[in-house]
Structures are given as C-alpha cells and as structure tokens.
Amino acid sequence: MTSTLPPPENSGLRRARIAERTFRTDRWWLGPLVTTLGLAVFIVYATARVFQQDHYWVEQYHYLTPFYSPCLSASCAPGSAAFGTLPWAFPWFLPYALISLPFLLLFRFTCYYYRKAYYRSIWQSPTACAVREPHARYTGESRFPMIGQNLHRYFFYAAVLISLVNTYDAIIALGHGENGGFGIGIGNLVLVANVVLLWCYTLSCHSCRHAFGGRLNSFGRSPVRYWMWTRISRLNTRHMTFAWVTLGTLMFTDLYVALVSSGVITDLRIYN
Image: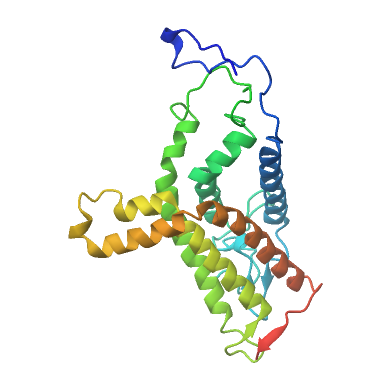
C-alpha cells in the first residue's frame, strides 16, 4: 500500500492521496450503504407523517404520537394539546409540534454517533480505511456550518425536557381506559416502551456523561455523581444501539397510533 503525502507546509490542509479507488477486497461499501438507507427511511417516513397533520391522536385512549407532541396548533384535535396551544392554526408547512421537533432533530443531527454515521456514509469523510475520499481538504468542525456541532450539549438539555413531555404522554394515557379509569392496552405498552428506550438513548449521550462527571477533579469528593457517572458510562457503551433502536421505535409508535386513529386496527385491551 502506497500513498503520497502532501508537502509539510500543507499537511494540515490536505488529505493523504490514494491513487487507486480502494485497496480493500472486502465489501467495505455495505456498511455505509445500509447506514444511508436506514437514515433515509426514517427521514422520509418522519417527514411525511409530520406534515400529514392527521391520524396522530386516539381520543378514546389518549394516545398521542411522539411526532406531534406537544401539539401546539389551534387546530390540534380536542384533548391532544395537554399543555395548551398557540392562538392560531398552523399552515400545512408548519408541524404541530413546532417547538420540540427542531430541537430533537438538532440533538440527533449533532449526536456524536450520528456524526460518525453520516460523515462516513453520506459525506464520505472518510468512507472507510484505505478508500479514496472525494474531498481534497479537511477542515473538521472548525467552520460554519459544522462548527455548530459544538452546540450538542445544549440540545441535550432540550431533549431531556422533551423526553419528560413524552413520558407525561405515556403516563397520562394509562388513566384513560375503556371506562375512563386506569387501563392498559397494546398502545400503552408501545408508548411506554418507546419512552423507556428514548430515555436510554438520551441518558447514554456523551454530553450527559460529561454533565455528571466530566468536570470533576476528584470523584472521591462526589460519590453520588461518581455513581451516576458510572451508570451513564455503562449506557454510553450502547449509545449506537439505542440511536438505531429508537429510530425504529419512533416510527413503530407513530405507525401504531396512526393505524388505531384511522380505524385500520383496533387497540387490544389487556386490562379495562
């Protein structure tokens, strides 16, 4: 394997040049391809559902899809806006969850794992070891707009608040059974499972780990924070898994609520 390195004076500005397209003999392209397809499926589905503005609420059981929580438009279905609405109806190009969705998207977009995923698969920087890159220069995250990745820690705090809202949605739905009291249906299990996994993804975030233990000079003086930091560190090792699993659970939860809301399926009740 050979490569031609750039002159020393430009070593920080240019990539190592590989004459061949790749020296790999395995299917190195499979990982980037699957990653791109997986992200594309979620983006297409989520975009279509967010702007559909229908079949997001099941009044009988108080099921609200996370894509529409909190519902803020004055045209939200009665009962779906648990925290109230703004005084006007949104046009079709504004999602009902106008405040929460941008922060959730930015939280995921700036996530350390997702950066790795789309840098390698979509931006191809780098695609894989010993594979020629399409970029001659490398500036990392030092220029606009990529310098905005450093705001991830702030989007984390917003994601925590939104996760609390999703948790509230899942809990309050348990109080809307067939007879108006406590009840459990398949939809409740779906909502609760989705919330639990969203918390796993949010709390396994690198910024969360840093918030609890990253600035401590001595763990011995902060035993509680050290205990929390160790638990978060264990979750952190599965952050990539939770990143992908929650994309699936978000789509499944939304699809389930949409199918029940539209009357395609009936929610199976386990209790009451």
